[in-house]
Length: 290
Ligand code: SF4
Image 1 (spheres, rainbow, N blue to C red):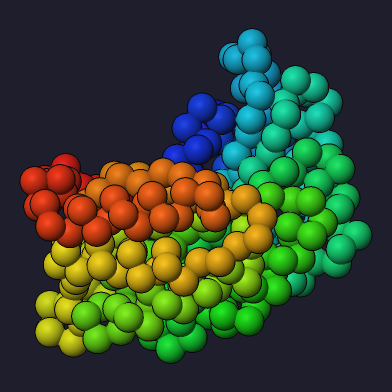
Image 2: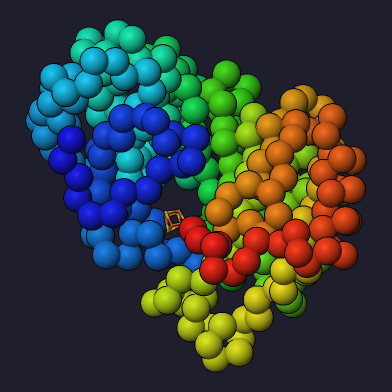
């Protein structure tokens, strides 16, 4: 119930109780991300976390979903996470799912047994920002993780029955690498087979290195039409064998898309083709936001 700084959560956790167990992001080096620049990473004292949970129990009659913030709380050791999950089970027996932001390296560092222990105690979904499937773009944005690591991490979690919800960034390769971004993002989704995949559109955040590159002309933003073309090529390169819920309906997107892959792929591609010819379908810049 007490929060430090701005709090970020995935759109699908809009009705969840947000519990801040870390402050900031342990990586905090992605060139496009300004979310946690004002925070120095630290782990909250477990006593404070317990106090927050007790306060929430007094305040809310029913809590069905809990989201563990901040940026990559899965970086925490299992012993700490298990203390939190056990307290949640004691205080909120009605809670059906606990979600968390994590990085590929966090998943890979944990053993199967550790991940299964978290799952058995309520952790049902890991949200991960993949951003792009292209190795060069991942290096340029300083993601600190490789394409191979991200594929291995998502497959590991999904194979253990933990859902993954991944976000990708349209335009993150700039005009120079839009084609590579589209193709490699499509193929990485095919190889990962996540439960959820969302496509956001890059918005530059003042004060970040990528914003500086844009100001100096080193990085060029895509036009709305190019963003739609990139999304079309990305979808054409997705070939999943199990259902993946696909969303591109974030506030940052020019055109809203929703569907299940692989079934709705052709319909969404057709929607994008039409939208490229009709600028009146595009969201006005004034209404786009992160
Ligand atoms: S994008 Fe994610 S991993 Fe990268 S700095 Fe931001 S919160 Fe941390």
